[in-house]
Length: 75
Image (cartoon, rainbow, N blue to C red; front, side):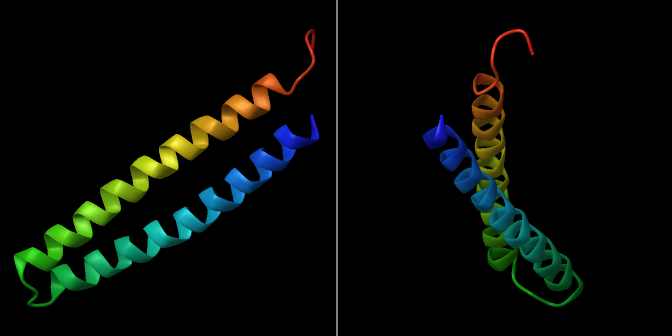
């Protein structure tokens, strides 16, 4: 059971870091949109944002599954 808790805690840490990175990318995307940046840079930021949001979704499902399976039956 310790291994499951350890993995869940590691995944939660990864998810937290990913959320911070996503927030940074979103701020950068907003700042770049207001300036005169090329479409290539905007497309690159958008791709990074989509990729990180997908990874976050996967991590959240993983954490959710670890939390549910770790509970004893009847609780």
